Amino acid sequence: MKIRIRGNSVRFRLTKNEVEQLCREKFIEEKTNFPNLDFIYAVRVSATKNLEVDFANNQISLQISEELLQGWDTNNKVGYSHTINTSNGKTIDILLEKDFTCLEDRGEDESNNYPNPKSLTH
Image 1 (cartoon, one colour):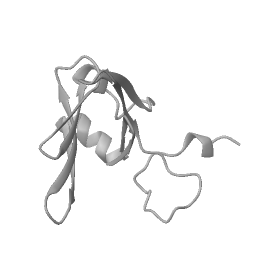
Image 2 (cartoon, one colour; image 1 turned 180 degrees about the vertical axis):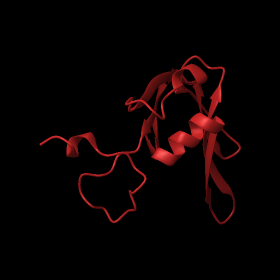
Image 3 (cartoon, helix red, strand yellow; image 1 turned 135 degrees about the vertical axis):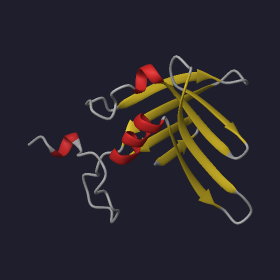
């Protein structure tokens, strides 16, 4: 699982195995070990109606409803997005999506990524 944070937007990208795990186990988590503490990012099923996100105890936690997640591992839906109001009157954009292979080789192992739709059209 990868996350990309830019300003007030957070994007979670999941490989095929991670999407399957999330659909099966209703939870997925990654951890980055820093010298003084761990940074955790997770996606879990909850009673929310859409996507929700929270940051507490060094963890970004994205919640998705069971209804939205149902069948995501077997359908062609790329992902889900939602904009949430923050406590300071601003908004944060949330995106959960399948991770596609890059169009140009970047030296990363992408064997578990979804085929990039742009590479399938000629």
